[in-house]
Image (tube, rainbow, N blue to C red; front, side, top):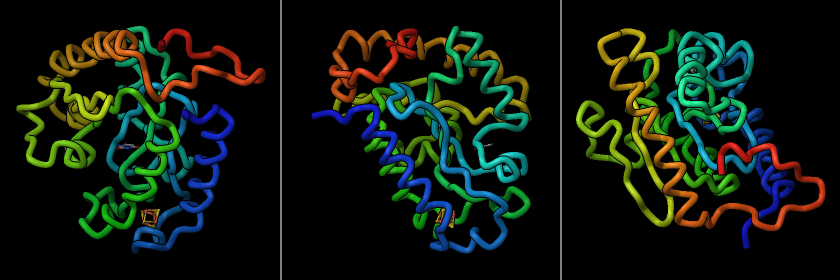
Length: 214
Ligand code: URA
Ligand code: SF4
């Protein structure tokens, strides 16, 4: 049985509360706010980035700085409203000076993301950059495998460049945009396949806000 929207929301809320109190790795010392993730608890698409930066740490929300603005534009460019997707990171607290997350920090934080995915049951997981890619494509090199979906256990995994990498190297823009356009095909594929994580029996309180995404 798939969870109802309310059950998924309750799970995400509980996970976010744990993250807010978490001291499992040293990043808790320097964070301003934790950044668990944001979006509908029954989103069919989930984006996974790396770690909060300055603005994310200030606001407690993922992808609200320059990378986030670009991600929002990329989504809008293919007709997807950012509000319809779930957005999270592999690490929930900002690394000092935006350094790369350390192996121990990635490991300490992994369980939160895994539980968020289990709650949301997205049909499509899109990784942004190397750190989230490594979770699903351990031997993958981003320059080679970006834009190539992998199907596993009824879910589509799709690696993309990190928006910040594209902002640093504007030559990647056409490829990034082409990769985002392919997301529309993946949505169609997931729809046609029938989506095991979709709540087919919505309670009376649920509004069909996500019709554009299945
Ligand atoms: N970069 C990320 O990987 N995640 C954010 O939330 C913001 C920038
Ligand atoms: Fe906990 Fe993750 Fe923050 Fe480390 S980064 S303190 S594991 S929530």
